[in-house]
Image (cartoon, rainbow, N blue to C red; front, side, top):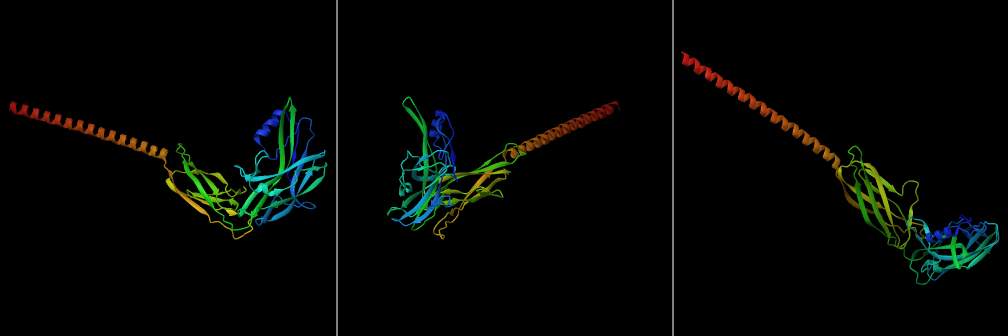
Length: 350
């Protein structure tokens, strides 16, 4: 159950929150009492345990449902009720358009009262309806319902306010042919070389998954490179969901990989169709293969340095040998000349 607690804050803090546009944020004017509330799906008698609302509806049909607003504070509060188009943000978390943004899709399909007044400690059950237009495209459509309050301060004719809201997701699957599809774009795999020859490098892969079909997809897959396999999401992490038309960028990293000149990198993306009314709706995995260069430049420089050192030592040895051979040859030549001179001198004395 979601709840938000209000505490006194400065007007400047309110303005900052307004700029950030924090969904389900909480704030209150300095003189306001703390306010806390929750909003959940419900049936006619109260909260029914659902976390979000999900319906499969034919075009032109209407489904009735309920929500429950519980006032956890000590004072009676009138909450503003609203519905808006939903989406997943860059962090993979569900969000919905702000109240100053106009909905054009599933947010306009929901009809509910503009407000509800709830006594302290009480829970109000509010009916709402969801009507799918006749010309609605088959597939998944996202919206959200919130209960909100406006907090702020007035000063010298200038008002500063923050809308704080709590709500839940409303998923509508318009019946008809389901066509799950996706594309993998902007795949980039790089080897990050360590110039320390005694340390391995790292592999970095970035890519973007685009939902080109009409069903929502849970993204998962694996990267196989350099004899290692890394799955995404990692164990213990939740899979990110993509609504039709949405795209999201991902980054993977494999540490401690020795440069072996190069190896293929296989990126496999295998999304799963999530919560589909048609259990046969599946989408085939896609594999992108790239050849990754991993030239061991530090090691090659070391080998080159050793080779140059050996060549220099060999060259010096050859030069020394030649110098010694030259000295020996000169000594032998001088000995021969000396012997000849002595032989001539003996001959002349006889």
